[in-house]
Structures are given as C-alpha cells and as structure tokens.
Amino acid sequence: MKKNVGKVDQIVRYVLGAVLIILSFVLPLYWLLIPAVIAIATAYFGMCGLYRFFGINTCKYNPKK
Image 1 (spheres, rainbow, N blue to C red):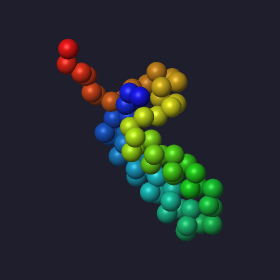
Image 2: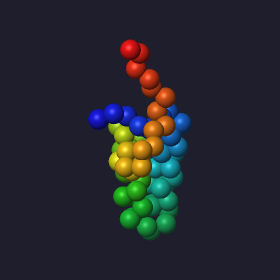
Image 3: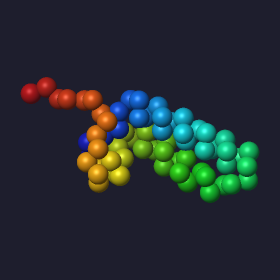
Image 4: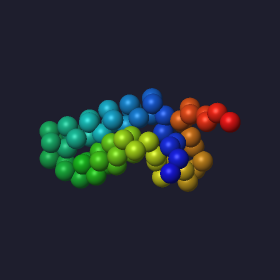
C-alpha cells in the first residue's frame, strides 16, 4: 500500500494518540483507547484509509523516474 500520511501529520497523530491514552486513564473513559490506537497505528504505518477514500495525500514523497 502506498503511504499517504506525511511527517507533520504523523507527529500530530502520535501526539493526539498519546493525549487520548492519558485522558483515558485520568478520566475513567476507556473507550478513548480505540481512537488512540487508530491514530497511533495510522501514524506508524503511514497509511490512512479515510485519506485514501477522499483522495488526500500529505506525504511529500515523489519517486524519481
């Protein structure tokens, strides 16, 4: 699969995932772990299904011909 998540987007997703994990333990809202895991997984793999569906690409990689 082609990557469609850029570096800045990855950093935002990692931070958002960490904040959601902290909030899920500070507040007893354990359902926040689900979007936290999704955010961290999409940042790690560099591919977001919703970005592909809507045709968004924040990755600046351009292969040389």
